[in-house]
Length: 97
Image 1: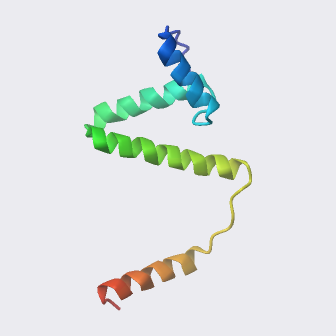
Image 2: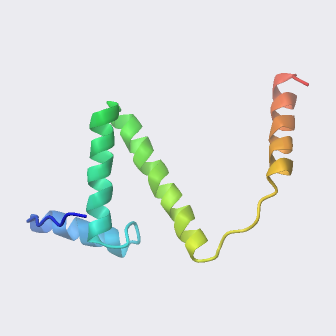
């Protein structure tokens, strides 16, 4: 990994610190890696601003789940029963069998 030094205006430095303190990121490095990665994805994929915001929200939600699993807060899932239930609900809504 390459190290990069940057200078931030005080307002942005405070924003980064608040984001870390809020638990959105583990540290400032993770914050900047995430931001640069999202920008790279946006440029490469040509996502609209609304799509990019949705992607950012999904990534935050995924990170919440990953953090919960890291803390041992996960539980086993009966996937066969779950999908059978979902398929049944779909069939009921759409008159399919």
